[in-house]
Amino acid sequence: MPRRRSLAFVGVAALVPLVASGASAQAASGSLTVTTLGRHGGKVSTTVTVVAVPSGQTYSVKSGKRISLPSGRYLAMTDIWEHGTEGLGTDTIGAQVVQVSGSKTVTLDARKGKLVKVSLDTPADVTDPPRISAQVCAATVGNMPSAYSAGGWNDEGALYAIPNSSKLLQFGYLAQWSGDDSYVAVKNTTGIPSAPGGSFKRSKLATMRFSVRAGTQMAQQNDTALQAVPKVDDCTTDLMAEVRDDTAPYSATVHLTPGTWQPRDDIIASNGDDVGGGFPKVRTLKAGQSRTQSFGRAAWSPLHYLPLLGQKSVTFLPDALIGDPDVGGLWADPTKETVVLSKGSTTVKKKTLTNWGTGDAEFDAGIRSAGWYRLTVDAHRYRPGITFPAGMLSPRATLDWHFKVTDPAKVMVAPVFLTRFLPTGLNSHNQAAPNSTTTVQVSAGRASQGPDIKLTKVTAKSVRVWSSADGGKTWKAATVKHSGSAWQATVHNPASGAVALRSEVTDSAGDRSVETVYRAYAIG
Image (cartoon, rainbow, N blue to C red):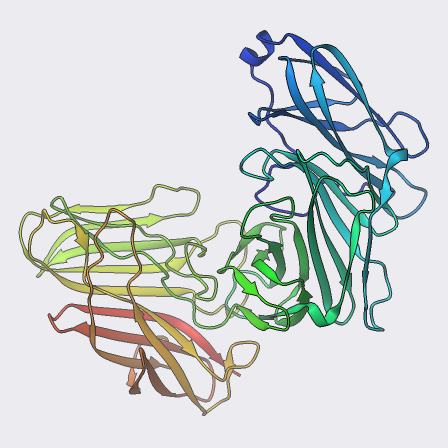
């Protein structure tokens, strides 16, 4: 079975460099041929990344093939991978600084590669060598390492790097040991060291714990990972350590070098499609610190967009309507929704939309006069081609906003809120015990809609909460207490089924925001 060749990171075009433009080829006054030799001295076919210094113009060429280039200085970089009789074969990462004038030929020789050695005072449950992802980058070109790097991955003992002391290069790697927990170390250097690698101690590591719950996602398989995000981009940027790829629910613990890390989650459907997930906020960890990243907690709800007023219209983007609040931002599931704007008993506009397969879905309705308006949104998760898990939670969310427009031409965000419900005490399947009581943390928020759109300060005057055990046919008021900047609602659970949650947030001017999440959590 052929092994996957690319480095395990996402959003980085490290091994898919730009192709030289026709104009550059016409202006060429020189040429470069790069020969790559394996660890036994024979020629090995590779793809070579060639980067102009300092412009960053990037070319891709097969080893042994001549490429026409303008005269100047270049970096030639590649990963020389060779089949082995067992395991993953070998990788040798190398680069050379080349001055092109006339016809130039250079050789990258894997026999000059030095073993990348990493060590950790590992616990007894770690028995295998670490897996190492490594790359060489153009150090003086912006937007590192995107498009300006070459690299590969392998087990320790089969990964080499050809030393080069040039300050035009950086060398970065991520090493991961696996046992009951995972252990991850990253390191970046200027140039490629003569003895690449490093030594690490568990006592100097930080800890990230992953808690992945079941029931809320569009599929059950969750692939969680961590990506390195140094404060200043270097050759470790976006190198990725897989945490666990498994059926939810599960938990996992990773001990890692201090620094800034990006947690991520990919939700994989039974047909193999990546149908969800996203990137929560980055975490900066110091040695000895421990943090928890949750995915899939109940309840999923609208995350970001509010109605926009101005230029004699009401505009709403039907996006991020059902998503994981622990991920936040715009990482939400696709939906189909019906949006209705009315004034009194008159319907101004009604439209059914979806953000599945399109990036320009938008509701826009013209208004002529000041007054009280009502905007309702009824959103259902919508993903053709897959079958949702039986009993999926948060399949539907509704919004009912009632707000006053004083000047139809004035540009501003409508004075309304989005609610986050966080039921506490649920098990890993987002279930409460039958006939129990659940405390639901409730917060009302207003996110910035963009730098050019005014977000006025609006204060919630009152918050009310209801629960339903029959899918929204009947509702029971919950006891609500104000606690700091949020509220706590006490919900009495039924003997079986699921619980829907509804909130009503009002301000002193009478603007009202009603939000409902159906099947917010289950009983089991």
